[in-house]
Length: 411
View (cartoon, one colour):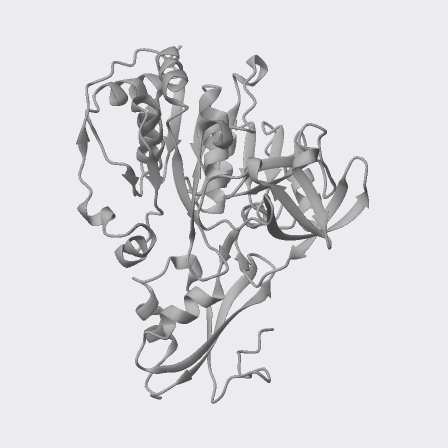
């Protein structure tokens, strides 16, 4: 039986594993910078990089060129495709063999927003990016609903879990609600990993998806109303939360909002002042990650329920990042970009609670010209920032509130 690898109704793509093997076998050029609107092309290039043992650098498809150059330098513009000898891939074991040979030298690089306004560059080895992969015979028939951006950590976690078990991947990300539900039921999807925002888009629970046996959530806090509705919509599914970050990958999970640290990683996690710290050995490689005596402050504040084993609930983030739809937006980056507009005198960017997205990005602007309007602001940002970073609410004010030291007074 020919097994389906990936189906994307949005792009009109349907590829079997045989199609994938053929495409990989016919590839003779490679570029380490991966920037594509096509989910399949991203997946194929990741696999290709593993086969030839080359680094891959994942870039969001909506990154503007000036953003990319800021992140990686002029190398992005000057980089050219490399030619390499054709590798014949006839079956999955051929890929596994190449991974075993190349995994020590291979690395994957992606980006996350930091607190300085500049996204951090994070590199992972094969072992760290696939740390959470469970490869078992009982998972051979899993069918994954893919509900993340493929160039972000959460999407990579799902991809590697599915691919290493030769599972089928069905794109759900970016589809309308009715199309998502159709894809789940028509393709008999068994597993979905997504943000609470994605799950909220599926409500109200007026349809039943009986094929799904596992829902995984991460990136935001799950509210009880959504959780209860999902139990109605997915009556045969377990629901679990995961803790993961671009810096560390996936670390631990829970079946509710209470996390318990497994004994094998407990010595690499500590809590100080209600904040989680991770040991250097759990982290990816990045010059942007700051350690204090081998420990990384995550900025995640928790409520400790029990010390042995460490059991806790997440409370909030220590920093000022805005979490919107599972994406983290740094207000400083948005403010600095807006200040490039000659019609703007000063600006303040903040998050506002939203029942669907968790938060929406808002801004207050002191303008130099009354002719500046909301549309002009969004048009100005459209080729400079990713869509989720652009403020949904734009308010024009005469003056911004400041602290006694003259800094913007953040809410």
